[in-house]
Length: 225
Ligand SMILES: Nc1ncnc2c1ncn2[C@@H]1O[C@H](COP(=O)(O)OP(=O)(O)OP(=O)(O)O)[C@@H](O)[C@H]1O
Ligand SMILES: [Mg+2]
Image 1 (cartoon, rainbow, N blue to C red):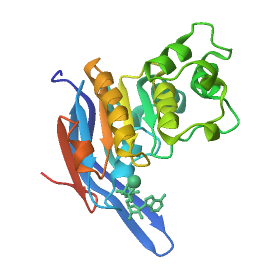
Image 2 (cartoon, rainbow, N blue to C red; image 1 turned 45 degrees about the vertical axis):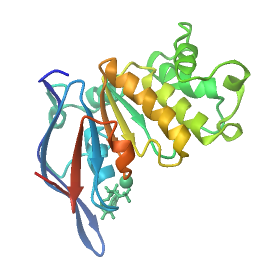
Image 3 (cartoon, protein in one colour; image 1 turned 90 degrees about the vertical axis):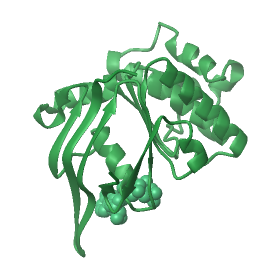
């Protein structure tokens, strides 16, 4: 692990304005995550975990404060720069897998490459990554509904890795999985971290959090000191 922050939040506040009033989902959050770190984010339901992950992933913009990814201030990037940064630097793994139902396992993993290069893959990378997460053979032609939850999560991990991101963001990556499958997924994430990828993982499960180097606890939008 290096001592260079790859993610920095400075006084980040996120307010959702609703007809019933404002919801302060993040309240002046400042934190640094180092390159190569494996961090767990824990806290009660509604405390702001997903909101925090969405700001880090630049899927959403802070109401105020500054966010730096790989040394760059997100607030100073234009739309094209943001899109490129999201695509090339960050991989997302969601609790509900978010696979595209009409595409096969293989096509789901290939898809980000088609978006990036505008053509079908010829490098074999999707197959390589699927093999790494334990999927090969006829399975690759199945649709997401035709495989198990654990297998879907492996596909989602392979897809998140296809553009070789430095940072992996995971929201409850084992939330829908049984204990044995959860352990397999956590072993894959641990390997990816050992290869140097920075991992930020939201979990409500203390057992899952033990895989991380450090746990950040968030309550009512505030990070515990
Ligand atoms: N798009 C939105 N519009 C309005 N309010 C929102 C929105 N997203 C989240 N919130 C509110 O912001 C607060 C934090 O929500 P968030 O989803 O970050 O919680 P969480 O810690 O991920 O919870 P959980 O463990 O249940 O997933 C909650 O009060 C929630 O109702
Ligand atoms: Mg959440």
